[in-house]
Image 1 (cartoon, rainbow, N blue to C red):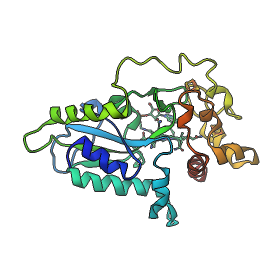
Image 2 (image 1 turned 180 degrees about the vertical axis):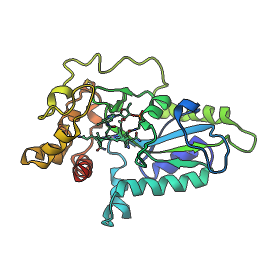
Image 3 (image 1 turned 90 degrees about the horizontal axis):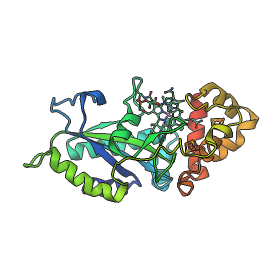
Image 4 (image 1 turned 45 degrees about the horizontal axis):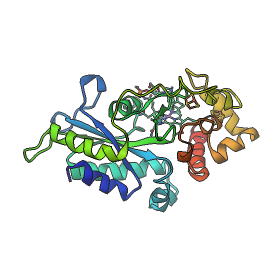
Length: 244
Ligand code: B12
Ligand code: SF4
Ligand code: SF4
């Protein structure tokens, strides 16, 4: 399995999406492959909306009672696919130091920084995240990185618009409601006050955020149809609150 089409087919079995690819430079801070081969392309894999949720929920990881079920689910899928592709699986949650997934996202697709620091996408809004990346050497059997990228462009046509000049979504957002909606002002526009957020979640006042997801994130008018389901959002809020 070396083509993006095959990869997307394999990911679809888990409700995951091939988000885009890029040819790395030294600025992208990729680790070295254990076999010493240079990395020719990095393919980003993630979730869009709550489409993956029923697949994850049906997996044994969701209900085995062990810690970090979503990270373990991601690792199992990522490592299995990496082995099939002859690639190296890289995860957003291994660290610190962490791999710069948001930087890689901007290299691979039409994301841009938002006032909430999360990457915002013109079609998915704030309702997307990354589960792993596959770092691949130049393709074998005569094809090379150019062929990889030609294939990837074909797949991307079905995933997201080509990366092009995108308007700054937040600069054009009337009133920037995400910065007004948090009851404790945890999103200031250039930082996230993690402790203020966590204290609110642990108090009786935080039930709405805990049960239905971050009020600031839900205030964003971009791509409302992609908002996470309450059950999916509550899963992330609980994971965050348990750690902070
Ligand atoms: C550490 C971390 C946090 C810290 C932020 C501390 C900090 N100041 O960096 C905390 C624990 C606060 C956090 C919270 C959340 N996070 Co977080 N987090 C990360 C993580 C693991 C590492 C970030 C990092 O240091 N990267 C290293 C640097 C070198 O990489 P970079 O891309 O250049 O750095 C960027 C980030 O640091 C970012 N950043 C800085 N401060 C903050 C604060 C917040 C809240 C976020 C989201 C990002 C952020 O800006 C940097 C420049 O672009 C990334 C995964 C990753 N590997 O990137 C996820 C990640 C950034 N988080 C993510 C998310 C979704 C969240 C949450 C909103 C939801 C959740 N999963 O719980 C929460 C917010 C809680 C809430 N109230 O809703 C997503 C963002 C997806 C997107 N659309 O962009 C990521 C990419 C994980 C993923 N699997 O996709 N997070
Ligand atoms: S509410 Fe507006 S400013 Fe905030 S993240 Fe969404 S588009 Fe950007
Ligand atoms: S989860 Fe609630 S308290 Fe935390 S940043 Fe979002 S709105 Fe604020």
